[in-house]
Length: 302
Ligand SMILES: *Cc1c(COP(=O)(O)O)cnc(C)c1O
Image 1 (cartoon, rainbow, N blue to C red):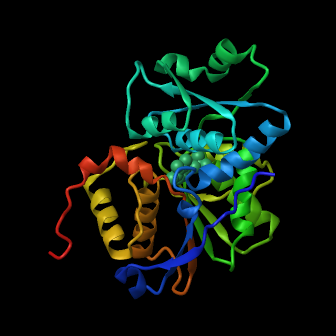
Image 2 (cartoon, rainbow, N blue to C red):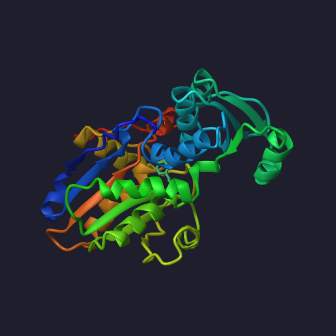
Image 3 (cartoon, helix red, strand yellow):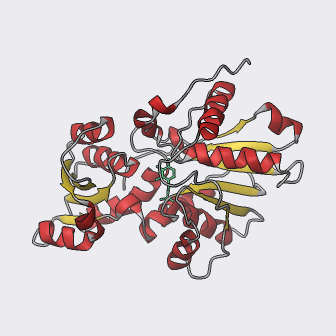
């Protein structure tokens, strides 16, 4: 129904220290799906959009922070599939940044709300659009069962079976979809999540909500670097090294923490030599636009 061909190849990636440990790492390049409807955000939107169109809704309403990959993805998808989009943006007053400017270029209407009102999203939706029969509600970050369903398809695309699949987690929707599909297909794969928020245990609860019978994935809780969009000199130095060594762009909010975790686990001999790892590159590279000033650009030859 939605004409959108998924291009997300599996490509091997290596750092010299990983080779020494004989660990094979493959990236699932969801970052290549689309430049703006980035990675897992397309997977999470797909069935939501399909349902909205089936219900003859012509206006999508959703929620996000000022650098939200989900808002940018929704704005671009709305323009592509000819659906109006409105977003409630968390923030006390009107402000602008490159991501929000791109959202507006795609035709998205932004409504800025203070943190307190932002908490009660159902009320916001009801107050503004309760009377509007054309509106369709999509959760912040594309969270929910339709979002997770879209993410199961990542597993159905895989060309081989892996010992481990790793993904970065915000809401946990992508992780839940992947873990569910691994169960469904009866794969031997162990599924791992790297929460990028503090106190990431809640992700297991979210997974259970979405799929009550699921084999719980393994969470690694120590790679949040202080919380959402927080970073450290060490994380930024690793990201710089990874990008310069592989030619693959990552960013500090999600994929940087994910690959830092992989690197750390490899160095700590968490894996068995010859293990095959699949790491999901969920995209979100526009996050770099708000963070480039943090890099110290150390001399890698030293
Ligand atoms: C949103 C996002 C995630 C988190 O996905 P969830 O399904 O919310 O866990 C991971 N990586 C990137 C790049 C994202 O934009």
